[in-house]
Image (tube, rainbow, N blue to C red):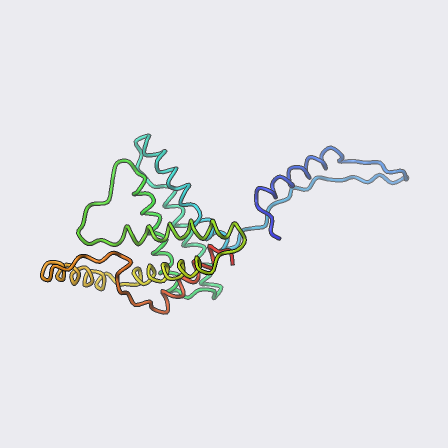
Length: 231
């Protein structure tokens, strides 16, 4: 069973304090045994561990954004660091052969969008500009929401199959959206607007969009699920 960092630090502190108090002990023999307190360090986090930390930092990002914004600062230093750390960890997995570059790029784009969404949703001096068709905020919101859900369930040790299936479907649909090129996205928006203006059809919700789930999109969604579910 893995030990949480908090529990590890508690045990580490108790252990070091005990050794410092009994650094040299004379046992009932002519030999004196000295115990030297050797600093212990937690094992280095793996790239997957660091990625998971990034995905579970949305709450901290929101709080830091609100705190900074209340002091008149809108610069997203913490969010920028999260995006950089996320990219570095992904690159290590690509180098190790655990991810293909296209899948890693897709995951990075999605994560960057989620970080931007959290920042923009909590900064006090800006907001999303109203647009008739813009699925970016909803798409990014899906990522943040699914990260929260999967983290909550993974903490319980077991994830309900129905919840997992819903998360899989939501993330695959989301990755399919991020897999669209800029030209594809503009074409999609133009088609929706033409249908809305010429035929009077309502603008579909993000969930109603018919998007092709490419192999890379499916692989990216599966990676995120496994990462957040602690697999």
